[in-house]
Image (cartoon, rainbow, N blue to C red; front, side):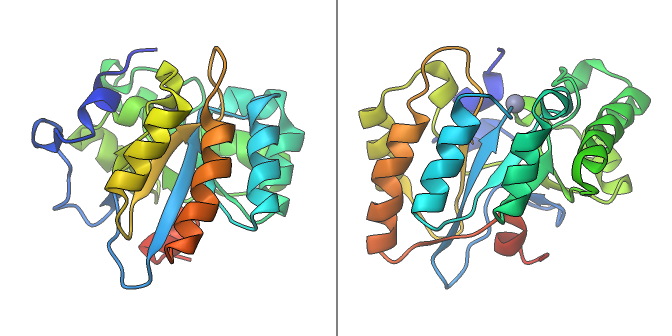
Length: 223
Ligand SMILES: [Zn+2]
């Protein structure tokens, strides 16, 4: 997996255009209520999505899953469970392509195919779009806006896909967390994921500090 954008998100936002002048693009949404959003990309996955859903349920918190359309088609039951348990499902394209290499029409098709995959499963229309690897351009954003999406990036990158350790991720989150943060995890990785263990540690700790966990639409105020 190419990862240029992932690597640039912590402490190096100056080199990663944040599009904060665009009201439809969010990396975070500061608020008075200590609300934060957990997000999970690239699923569903037959191992980790289920584990993560179990942990969120035990802790009575909701998250947002940015799913890949072709994975959604393989595991429709997991999408149905995400929706039934009150989580939000966002569009992460159908094939997870390198969007900057595509024409605007092809980007549009990727978003629409991802949307259709979800609609076929549960009559669900996602309103959030996360471009693969956070890869943005004015054209990609315009395309998502024309299809009525908010574009969701992130303010904390766990690098869980790169097999960052449980300890490192936990410490990084606990050190950097601020109200309104959008935290990027993955529920589909190629090797062993640290994410379930991290969630078991950070959710109770953050709750104790007064943070509450909301879906991205709740955080940005569109739901
Ligand atoms: Zn992705």
